[in-house]
Amino acid sequence: MSPLSSSFVLCRAAGDVPASDTPVCGKSSRFRRRQAIPTTRPTEERAHFAVGIPPRSRYLPRQASLPSRKGVVFNLLIDKDGLSYCAKSLILVPLYCVNVIPEGENEVGTEIYGRCSRSAQPNRNGGGTCPNKSVCKEGRGSNMTATRSKASENGSIQTISVIVPANPFIKGDLHERKHCLAALDVLKLMEWWPGTPHVPHRNAKKVRAIQRSLDWKRVAQISAYLLQREIIDAPDLLCKYFQEIYEIKADEPGRQWPPRVPRVVKYQRSEFPTFSNVLLHVNGASLTKSGKGVANLRFDESDSHLNFSVIDGQHRINGAYFAVKILREDKPKITWEIPAEVFLDLDDPGKPPRHQAQIFIDVNFYQKKVDRSLVADLFPTARGRAPIDDKERAQDLGRRLMLDVGPLVGMVQIPGIKYGVKDVVTLSTLNGAIEDVLCDLHSAGLDNLEAQADFLAQCLDSWLEATGRKEDVAESETLDPENVVYQGRAIVSFLTLTPACILNLSDKGIQMVSDKAAKELTTWLRGIMTRARLIRHDKFLAKGEFRNKEFLGSGGLARFRDSLWAVVETDKALSTRISNEKLSEMASKCRADVRAKLGSPDED
Image 1 (cartoon, rainbow, N blue to C red):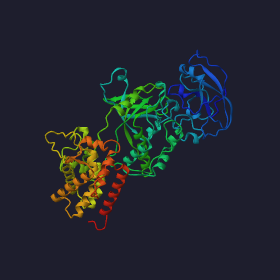
Image 2: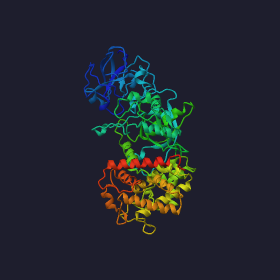
Image 3: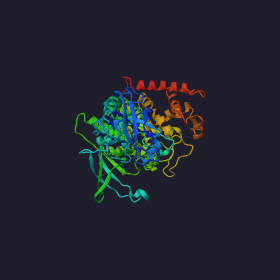
Image 4: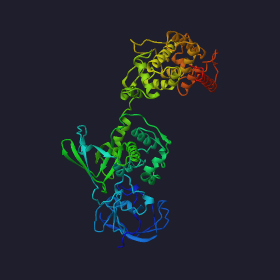
């Protein structure tokens, strides 16, 4: 028989066979079948085909430029399941992406059976040496098991010490399936797995992957968080370190290449940058106990049956890989092991990832996200130091107004722990509004935490007094159902008036925090509400009237805020027929005037 000297060979179409089959490069009808393959033949029957490769075949990847070959005879070994598929659908795949078995090894399930004239040394992908680096880059594969060579080299055996936690809640057949806790080198993990995104299929049994498409912005943000610094020229760096992994897969569904992210990626501060464990699934590994609760996870990284897939955590893995690569620019020997929970053989090789999909749903859908206000309350505790920017100062001020000073003490909501009073502003919303006006507090000479908290508490008290709807909820712990002045949209809209409050007191020469300032602000705010037509029967609008003015629902917050700002510098009441566009124009002009006056050289 002629040796297999062509760079490409025929194999079954991956869409018709289990996930362990070879990845698709393109369909082809350019072959001559020398011998029919009846479906009744024994499992290990060999079928002989001849294939010719044109120099510029439209079925090859665009990067390929291979010499012309005449017909080459090779042997294709087909298992029982494959017999029904082989006759109707064959494809061309690169030689370095399949398992080439020396003639004489008649192993059931092997994709290609024959001799090869090339040196088929395993590469990072596990196949033979890549004959065309422009096509394969570094020969990385997907999570399909047929992308690795069967042959093992010295050093390809991996033994990792792991913890094996007992789980009494698993029932039935899965009780025998093992899982463990491990720490895995992220650079090695990216060699074992760059996964494939989920692609819908009308036949659920042919779904092969469960991960969503990769969000490159999130990958870069995770990396910046781990590095605790901004990433400059993020798109170029992503291409530099991920090109060899993902560029060759750019045409697959669910891929985005090149990455589209901002040039500069910011980060969230942390004194201990880390993340929770990722969830992995492995076929082709063994777990050998070495003591109570501990074991060795062992596998051959070049084994054709080894298959890594990610159940949850693909963004963390890619982000960690990116961070380590950037860190290695200055410290070439740096490594990082990320925490991982590894499940072994939950789903059989080549079968739909049924159990993996259920875990993915449990983790990402059924579990409830932590409430933003609870996180906002915990931020100052987690810092354990003084604030270093406006966001952190706003967090501290929000907690002071919630716990220590002002009319909102005990009322601000943290829904996640059922703290506060229903229909009162939440802590996260309050913090955001405070952050937006901190520059105005500084302009008024209010720089320390106590002065800022006292001034904001005074302004909020004046707001509530002016509405005529201030309530004491110490006993009932509930608000009047018609009272809207404590709601997030009302409090946030009022706090945007902070620079106007400062300017009003400054123009009249009144000390910023004083009884006189409180009285002045109450009178001034009452006038604003009256001119904005927000007072009826000597009280702020009830909930039903508030809704009728379109202050609730989409666009309602902007309309309410603009109604307050539009009358700050006028003695005239708003027209009942004013349009949203005119209202926004008046409010914008007034805000600009107030900001300009606060920033004037004469302003102290």
